[in-house]
Length: 183
Image 1 (tube, rainbow, N blue to C red):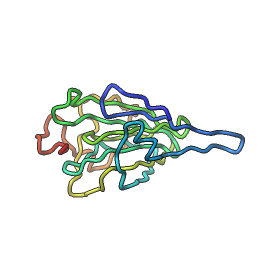
Image 2 (spheres, rainbow, N blue to C red):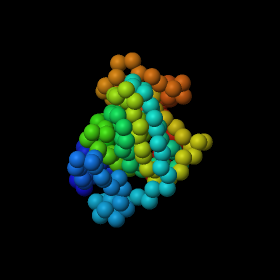
Image 3 (cartoon, rainbow, N blue to C red):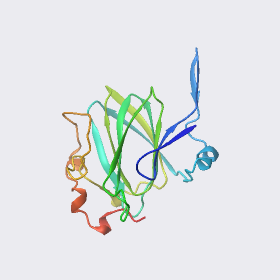
Image 4 (tube, rainbow, N blue to C red):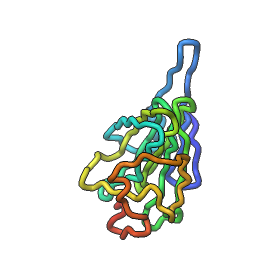
């Protein structure tokens, strides 16, 4: 397993070992001991599976009182996955990281608590699986508008498909401290 640090502390690209032969491949998608040895020492309590079509943008989502670390991997297709640092007091507050994840590169993205998360689908369809370090609490969910000009994410999609809920989120600069993750 290869861990690649990014320009924002708390976000890592993970390249699991993949064993390929004429039959296909095998890989461990998660091994608590190996991830802990690599410095990712979260207890994951929930697994999610998401399916979306090309040009879908989901996010930017987070929870306030129950922040979640996430370990994301694409099962089929390709996405552009984004993490935005919204940790109060962080030296990289408001900065973002974007990573291409696909069934071809088999990379994973680990995002610590205190980040807003979103992605867009680049392939015809995509299935992604992600582990969360806390449970989903519907009343605690919040978000930032995907197109926030203060963040300036360079989404690789021209005409995104966005849910009504995601269209209504505010800009990061409009949020107060109690509307940000409690970390």
